[in-house]
Image 1 (tube, protein in one colour):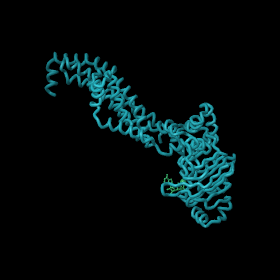
Image 2 (spheres, helix red, strand yellow):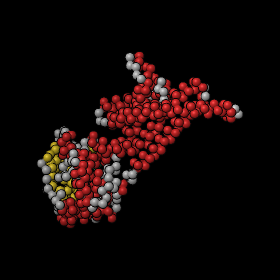
Image 3 (cartoon, each protein chain N blue to C red):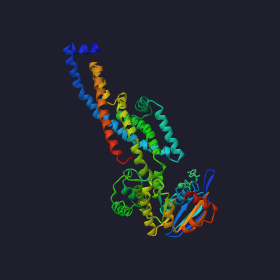
Image 4 (cartoon, rainbow over the protein chains, first blue to last red):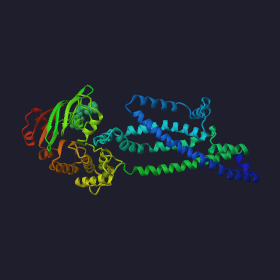
Length: 234
Length: 244
Ligand SMILES: Nc1ncnc2c1ncn2[C@@H]1O[C@H](COP(=O)(O)OP(=O)(O)OP(=O)(O)O)[C@@H](O)[C@H]1O
Ligand SMILES: [Mg+2]
């Protein structure tokens, strides 16, 4: 550490070179973030959430078949590494003639992952809503679906907001794994830059810093949303 | 008119209702009393079909359900609309304001136009004395106010019968009166009501008939002045002595 710092500050020429690399790296890194990391996160999260709600509903349904399908899906995704899943989708599927674009592969992988993990969050949130809420819905003539949609899910959404926000923040960081399936998201950009200049510490730290800034903003938004949804809670 | 014939309800091995027979004339108010665990809540919940009776027939204003056979979901839903349920712990929707709670049934279940439903809900909330609280969330209301929203929510579906399950027993004593007042007004307007309550004054003043339940059967039924001053059955006498 000390040597590294010394080597920077003792040698004005090297200092200038590092500052220059830091500056010129910023643009491609941000580009990777804006063009890929962020869209990949958002798209995967939205699709993942839809999958998660459906899976949670299947899990609590009276129909055994839906329950089993949902259980197998969640178990398979949670029981295997995300990296391996991405490899199967991108490098594996072409063996059976299914070649998928890197970005799409990553979206599929991340959506499936979010869908499985978030379904457990949503299921727990649904089960945490008192039985009396269902009954109040039924008592004014609602069907199961109406009560679920109008009464239970909105309340479950509030309960699951903090854990879901955490999932989203994790997802933003996990998208760095998409670098291995050739998505030029931020981390892959960093790898490309270091391949040319070997300044690993500097460039990877710079990427880390950008991840941190993004996640910091997300947690600010999370706090804001939680405040808003707290309005009606006793 | 409501008519219950041979109503049985069993939870696993536990038989909770053991053949309830009851008729309530249109516009009458029936107060149900009885010791804890005697099946009062279960009977109301059967009328609202929140519980499916093991057997028996319920008839409300010409529509009947026979639970000795399997009942299709669709007829349960339409049957449920005949009764409005008021719960002991209100069960308001916490994510909706007072007026949204009241509008929800008409808009979602009956498909009433939103603005029409809003106007009607406003009238109902005024009727229960909450015209100034329409856009409050349940958490911002007192227990008595919440229960009055609960009553308005049930009324919004224009039920034939209102069912009340100990509507004031979760309330602080000073809030009981405001809820009973609303119920009394309803009774005077001619609403048919079945009320489980231990508010004896309410029973005396409002009820056309008082029913004493014990062990899953109706032990005694009579006019309030009769049953309170001159109970026929020993069990009724014991219970009344205990609570008075
Ligand atoms: N869902 C259920 N599953 C199993 N047993 C139940 C269920 N609901 C009620 N019971 C039982 O049925 C019996 C009657 O309950 P119910 O709630 O109808 O009594 P109650 O007369 O309303 O009593 P309280 O005055 O305490 O409200 C009790 O023994 C209760 O434990
Ligand atoms: Mg009860």
